[in-house]
Image (cartoon, rainbow, N blue to C red; front, top):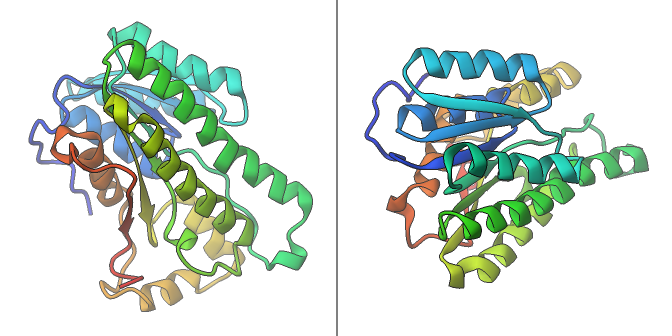
Length: 259
């Protein structure tokens, strides 16, 4: 399913940064945001993938650039935010989608090395990104919007992915705290919490635990997994002016899994 073929100008004129744009939801978001009128900077660790997606956006008439960025590297996160502002003259918003997964397993088999890695990428990385992006928005556009990618797994027990779920839950708290901090300046901070979504991370979980996608779909009223583009639509709305009174929210995009 692809919901990005019809456009409405939802993001016309905005300069947006997408962190974690080389695959899955981030790549779908980059394409969608450009189709909706935004100028986008794609950031991730894979230059080859970024170049390919950027070329595709340009071929469709969009405005896109890319930069290498590692959420585990404070300097590259700040450089990506500054690079967006330098290229486009402003930063209106950012979508922090990059994340690290973990091999499925309970708490007592999840080692400190796994916990530390998931913490560095899934919590410390967005922490640094939100700070850098808010500073760049403040210095250029003045007001704007930041959206973090959480997970429906942060809103319930997550015994198979405990480190991942714990850090995503912490990200929800960071999102709410940042919304309180930056709201008086007109900078909104929200998160989306995708449910079962057909990304490489999910396929990796399926490979480790065969049948998990069918099991998750069985718990979902819509009875299927989301296409990444469907989740990107929610992020686009939150970055748009149509969500101008929405901040501090963790929006479930889960097909009704937690209904």
